[in-house]
Each structure stands twice: as C-alpha cells, then as structure tokens.
Image (cartoon, rainbow, N blue to C red):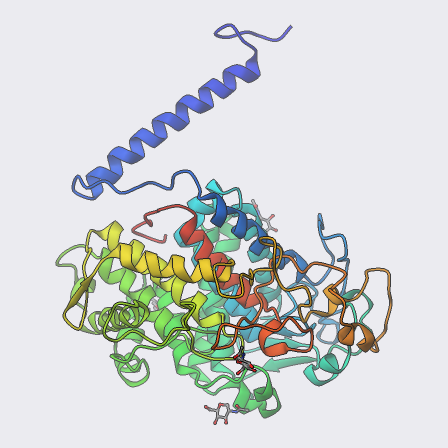
Length: 521
Ligand SMILES: *[C@@H]1O[C@H](CO)[C@@H](O)[C@H](O)[C@H]1NC(C)=O
Ligand SMILES: *[C@@H]1O[C@H](CO)[C@@H](O)[C@H](O)[C@H]1NC(C)=O
Ligand SMILES: *[C@@H]1O[C@H](CO)[C@@H](O)[C@H](O)[C@H]1NC(C)=O
Ligand SMILES: *[C@@H]1O[C@H](CO)[C@@H](O)[C@H](O)[C@H]1NC(C)=O
C-alpha cells in the first residue's frame, strides 16, 4: 500500500510540495524584483500569450525540418536520415548541422548566425520559452548546430565553413534523403582567411557557452575555449571569406568582416567578463569600424546594430560609477543603439520607410528578415529599458517609452502572422492561410519518391507542396504588400534557417510581458 500524507497518495503529496515550492519561489521573486527595481513593479514572465506561444511552437519546428545527419526522435514524418558522410574527406563528422534554406547547403556563415541568434533568444527569454513549453525545442536545435560547429573546428587555425558545392546543389531538385552528388568541403586557414565566418562562429560559441553554463559545464567550457581560439584566429589572419573564395560571393556575400570581429568580441566579453574583449570593441577597432552614430539594420551580413544593442546591455545594467559604466566608447555604442531604435519607431522624426500595411521595408529579397530582426532588437531594448528603470528614449527631442518599442515589435510580428493586406501568415503552418508552394526541395517532393538530381517536375508543379515545411518564415511581400505563392519565386517564397531563428527570438520576446536578467552569466 502506498504511503499516505495529508490524506492522499505519495504522488499527490509530491504535487502539493511542488506547488508550495513554486508559490514560495514566485513570492520570493516578486519581492526580489520589487527590491531590485526600487519598489517599482514589473510584470514577471506570466501566463504566455496564446497567439505568440502557438506561433513560437510552430516556428521552432523548422529546425527539425532542416536537420541533417542521423535524426534522433524525429517527429517530421517526411524527414529521414541524410548526409551521413558529410566531412568524411577530412575524417571529420560534419553530418549534423542544418540545411541553409530550400537547398541542401551547409553554409557556415549563416548557420553560425542562426546559432548566435538562438542563443541570444534563450539568454534573454529562456524563462518565457519555458513558460510556453518551448525551451527544450530551442535547446535541441541549438545543440544540433553547436555539435556541428565544434567538429568543424578541428585545430586552432582551421575552420570548415561549407559542406556541399552550391553550384551542383542548386542544379539538383531532390530530397536530402536521396541526395547523391558529391559534398566537398571548404575550409579557412591562415593562408585562406575568413575573419567574418570565423568571428561569427566564435560569437555563436561564446553565446552558447553562456546558455550551457548552468546546465552542462563541460560543454560550456569547451565552447568557450573554441570561441576564444577562433576569435584569435579571425583577428590575426584578416580577410573576408567571400574575397578568399570569390565564387562564394554569389551566395552570402560578406560585405565586411570587421562587424563580425566587434560582435564576437562583445559576446566574448559577456561570456568571460574579460575586459580586453570589451576594450577591443570600444577602443580603436570600434572607432574605426563600428561607424558609431549611424543607425543600421541588423542582418546575417551586418552585425553592427546587434552589437550596439548587446553592448548597451552593459551600459543599462552597469552599477553607477563603475569603470565600465564610464567607458566612453561604450557610451557611443549605447547612443547609436538609441538611434537604431529611433528609426524603428513609426512616430519618430527619423522613422524609416514602411509599407502601407505597416511593414518596415528595407530590401526586396527576403524582405521579412529586416523587420523581424529589427523587431527582435526593439523587444530586447524595451526590456533593457524597463528592467533597468531607465525608461525614457529621446529621438530628436521627442520622448518615447519602452512600451512604444514593444508596440513596434508586436506590429511587425502581427504583420508576419497574418495581420496584413494579403491576410496571409508568412509563417508556414500558422493560421488558416499561409504559402503552399514554399521553395523547399524536401517539402515539394513526396516522401516516397526518389528523383535523383532530376526532380524538376516537382519544382515546376503548380500544385501545393505535398509536405508542409512547418515553421518556415518565407522571404515575404513586395513593397506594395503583395505576395506571389509560386515555388520558383525565390525572393519571396524561400525559407531560410536563420529567418526562423530571428522570428523565434521575436516571438519569445513577445510571449510574455517580461523583464530580462541583469546579467547573462
Ligand atoms: C554535456 O554535453 C555533451 C555534448 O553535447 C554531452 O555529450 C554530455 O552528455 C552532456 N553532459 C550532461 C551532463 O548533460
Ligand atoms: C560583395 O561585397 C563586396 C564588398 O562590399 C563588393 O565589392 C562585391 O561587389 C560584392 N559582390 C557581389 C557578388 O555582390
Ligand atoms: C583576457 O583575454 C586576453 C585576450 O584573449 C588574454 O590575453 C588575457 O590573458 C585574458 N585575461 C584574463 C584575466 O583571463
Ligand atoms: C506589386 O509589386 C510587384 C513587384 O514590384 C509587381 O510585380 C506587382 O505588379 C505589384 N502589384 C500590384 C497590385 O501593384
């Protein structure tokens, strides 16, 4: 017979205990938050907003769709093992990682950026993700990327930055499970540098080391060690990977590499607390390369706006009078982050262009990447403001609040989720109406068909995809808010893994009205 306590079974008793502990923890946190904010009360990550929570659950599934390698607990019925021999020619296991988009390339530059953004999202909004039941899914995706990046860095000054030949890959229309073409490797070395891709990989690993710190110390230290060695390599052997390999500039052309060096140094500062990384970003390099004072958009190519927000974190939360708080260079980053926020706010005098439907519009190819990335930064910045109690933002004499930034962030998320002139959700699998012909090889070919390289009939078919690429955030609308759901319309209808990382960050920020932790470590 089961032991009894308070008139019920052991299991019931445990639940009572758990509930009591949870209640105590919540009370303690409320008291702590009040204390920390000088008596001001900010909402705790509370009941998740059902719309954003559902969208977050949908968005995270795209990482399952994009996985390469031997799948574990696969829940996507039309996906299976693929690319098991990736890395073999260098005797490395590069089978994990994720396919970049509707193709089967593994591009290190955007894959690492995906890892950095996932980590940043977990670091700021891990509690909100947990409340929505989605933190494990985010961690699973992050681990799959990090395992690949670790294996891609076999020695100090060698990093494998690409698996597959983009020309050969893009010529074939086939499922990843039946791929047969060669998967050559590309690596950077001291003689063939790639500071941008090495530094982005360092940023991803430094950020992930913070995520793993409380849960897996060994893995966290190993990631941090890789990150520091990669940063040293990136900084010492300078050059852009698309200048080293000009044939790759047709895919993800890296305009400069200095922005990634500053971004990686900022992440390494957060991960190590070592001031030499902070002075790297705020000193001479920052003055020369950060173009402080000029607001920009954050993207896989340009990390400056992201660096400004990430470093402003230090300014927001530095204790009064600390050396760090007085750092002049850091102040310029914070001022530029303010200017970035000012161009995002529609009521500000420096507001950037938006479409009639209200979408921030920067570029036609993959048009949603900029509004979604900007909205993520706005959500984060708004939470830095409310958590630190520094609640006012001034844009050319006009005053704005954290709530104004949050409103902008929501407006962009709502547009993406269907509140737009097309009444279409650009997040595949969310809502009643979303693109049916996403440019995605695996989704467009029935799971039991082996096309070899020549499955073009499935590319050209006018029919909807037989498989749903759940969680894909497609490129998005034209400047006139219109969209053409055609599989060959790659500008508008291709999904990318990094797009999904950006929307995951944004939705995690909106799931609850949250504050952020004052320290990332
Ligand atoms: C830590 O991470 C490594 C690498 O993913 C894994 O092999 C190991 O089992 C993890 N350890 C724990 C305690 O979770
Ligand atoms: C890539 O970027 C470099 C540097 O901005 C530029 O000079 C070059 O024309 C670009 N190449 C392509 C193919 O866009
Ligand atoms: C800080 O980082 C620099 C650059 O990597 C290194 O030379 C130095 O030893 C580090 N300092 C500490 C205290 O770890
Ligand atoms: C919207 O813009 C696209 C691309 O510029 C154009 O092809 C299309 O005809 C426009 N649609 C409308 C309704 O104006």
